[in-house]
Image 1: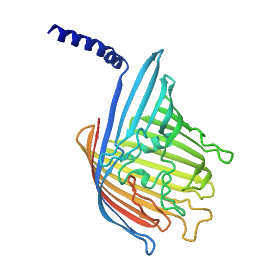
Image 2 (image 1 turned 60 degrees about the horizontal axis):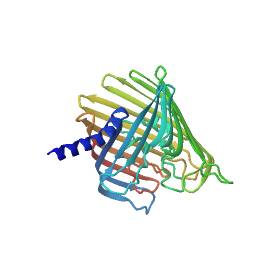
Image 3 (image 1 turned 90 degrees about the vertical axis):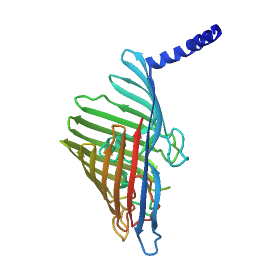
Image 4 (image 1 turned 120 degrees about the horizontal axis):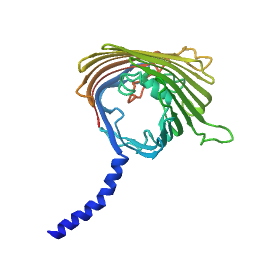
Length: 360
């Protein structure tokens, strides 16, 4: 018996310092699991175009697992870190630690980090999307530079980025005003190109009002596939306002690219809260931006309508049902906000989604 007590005491002595260290400077494990059952299809397009026949699927909606922590350095200064990785509850093919990860310092002057992180343009405009930049009706269906393929039907969202090799600064809030700035290093510089990215935002949050402006610039970056453009810029004005059970949101964006016309996009939404239930409608559209001068078929244009019903079981868990319809003209290639279908320009998409999200 004495030997057992001695062994337990020794084990306790070994464990105690680690436990005390984590209590003084906590490290937190956190995560999100979000999956949807969907029925999707794509129809139309030019004569002879193969349609995407109606199919069922289970889709991941940016599920993640992360660990973050801080250390008090004294004098109001803290060190912080975060490592965040994606994982798919429906599949097993994700890359480790591909999400927001970095290390930095924080004080009364704000926060400065080095690592890989969502741009200020993405973070601040994404706050307007009631679907959280995921699901079929998420705002990257038509916003963030989406839908203008030229010769390529899937250019992606150039302004919906998580930049690598980045330095970011986040200010504290001064009377509700906050600033973010980000610069991605030119590590790919050669004698011919000097690829760089920067992004910045300013927002005001006060009571029921959230408004802001964001700007983004890419130099010597590929678009839409292998073609390198000298310069691409994005500007966004956005805001939402809550009164009683109603929340209204709006976002306007414009994008300029070397050799292309100006692309204009806007989005509006309304969320009506009734107890634990929320009724959601979101409309998105983008137009113009084709190669200058445009092709004989004219300028691209698409429209996205989404209806949603969300039931909040708690602050951590909700159910979301959604119907989304994407309409593309002959030159556009907007897609779903999450989990694209392999379409060609001119095709229209429809989808129904039923999903559950839980955070921990």
